[in-house]
Image: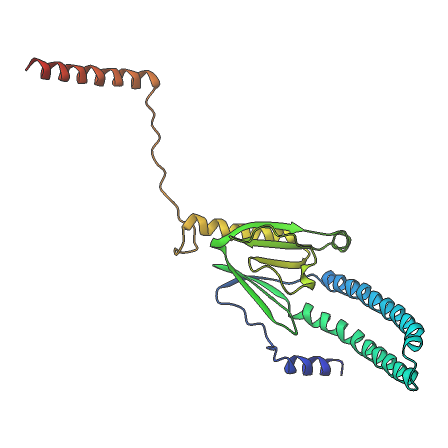
Length: 251
């Protein structure tokens, strides 16, 4: 029965039941299970902050509003407002954790023969594709909480991305830079970085528009002439050139 609301919500959000991987996919990565705990911890801290702010705000309003607005129905209206706020909080508290669970399940990262794709989001689906030919920088980022959980983020930047001052938790802000893609909450960031670097090197070795297979170039012959022999050959050419010039002057 626990899967019924899960399936209903996916159907309501029109989320495909199966992953629609791009053509030419060679590897698929998923966020680590610890990433789900990481998001839960951040959400719990946020909810505690919201709860504390709500309580403090309500204590302040309940103390000063009746003194400022001395109407017959002031207190009933305030009690109704208080009940509305608490009902909304109690409803959104479990829903927010459920949405985080769905975000974890629907999140995946794919490497194709020519590009990478990041698929994330529940209420607002976001897909970002970057071709290997345009990738300029790959870095691994990890904050103390991620280090404790054994996960990290792999940040990929393309040309024109710049070095904006963004924190490690940009996944909480949907307005991510257009020239950035992040493999969030992965347990093997080095392996992902190396896999992307390998594909980038392959494309830069083959050139734009060519096959992704490595092109082998024939080795050029190495000159074996000694420095002494080369000097003698140069001296002979100089003497021959001088003789030619002298004969032209005589004529």
